[in-house]
Image (cartoon, rainbow, N blue to C red; front, top):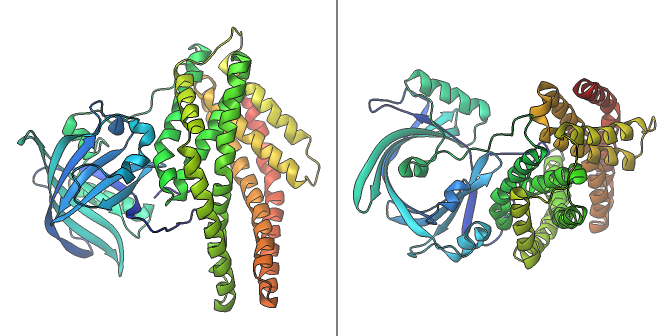
Amino acid sequence: MAQTSRASAHRHRSSPITAKPERELKLTVAPDFRLPRLPGVSLPRKLVISTYYDTTAYDLAHARITLRHRIERGKKAWQLKIPLGDDRQEIEVAGTQANPPDSLRQLLMLHLDHRKLVPVVTLRVWRRGFLVHHGRVPVAEIALDTVSVLKNGRIIQRFRELEIEQRQGDEASLRSLERQMREAGASDHDGRPKLFRALSLPAPTPAAQPEPKAPIVDHLKWALAQHVGWLLAHDPGTRLGTEPESLHQLRVATRRLRAVLRAARPILLPTWVTTLEQEVTWLSELLGPARDLDVQIAHFTEESAALDARDRKLLTQFISHLRTQREAVQQMVVSELTGVRYLELIRRLQQAAQAPSIVESPLTVRQLAKREFKKLRKAISRLAPSPSDTALHKVRIKAKRARYAVDLARNSLGKPAVRLIKSARAVQDLLGIHQDAIQAERHVRQFLKYSTSVRAGFVAGRMVERQRQRCRNVHKEIKPLFKSLLKRGKKAWG
């Protein structure tokens, strides 16, 4: 499962939809491949029949989305797989209906518009599985699949592949199993989902960044297309609201779009870029309260684990209070994402990625990035020896803008850009902890109002001190990061 450095928290609501994150590795295997001996238990061999649905132009597939009707041991269900960072989220709706349920179609409204979903191919998969244990903990499930591709009632293709899906293990356990499978004869997989192999579609890959000397408009179009695509990819998961990472990644896309538009202002038609920036800012601010609550719910959930049972009960009640707030915010977010304003913004962003309104300018993409970095450098130089919370937050914002602008010029700057981006991200992340601690203290004070017992006051005092210690730690650690960032900026531009 993809996670941010500031963690994430699950929310549950009564719904016919069930969802879970999916983290898996795929390998190619020969017809005579056999699983090596592993600790765990064999799973019964089973037949799974999946009919995939898409538009005639394969709009879902090109967006890394798959929708299928699945039959397994008599159980029928609709399954939707959508991007979740670099991984995916699996959503399931039980039912025997002949057409994709409206609940799933609503999640895909941006990708489908009014286009019709049709069955494109059926896969018959015989699966042999093995649940790998470390002690009593199921760390991963290994599936050895023999796939028959059916079209118009006849088999047109056969292939085998192996999947390692994470259960309660971590990245290290997944990679360890991958090494064992390779030692047993498995080899590289081309990364395509089964549907892509069945339809002979190429794997969806991001467009290559333009050459360093390409026109500045080509660099701008490339950056806008990447970020608009990321936004669209995480729109369905944000609507669903079960994985905070979906909303986080959608908000990341809006931040990147704002940064690119800001950096490119000198080469864009002022009236065109101003109104577009305003609308992207509206979307970012719409998502802000939800993201803040996700971060705080995750933080206080982690904090509660360090408390004794009596104090944990007090904090659990407050976390429940925050979750109720989050549900209310989710309803507002979904309402706005279904509205005309959002849909018009998406249309404008897609158009901008294809044909931004450019004005004549001698500036290069390197110069645009340098302008943003100079603003960051100036903000850092103006910091007092003991900077205020507001001043540090402003530097964090400028660090984000500079980082995304440098990313725009990455091909032109080469390795210095990669190092500079890494440094800017380190500053951004550390100052993010500082901002989270400030927000957490505000929520702690809310907790104190919510629960007025003497014991609650004691717990609140402990938590406030922990947040202030987080801030003090940031103040100690940030100066070396500033120094490294400025040094790498100097190397990038001289």
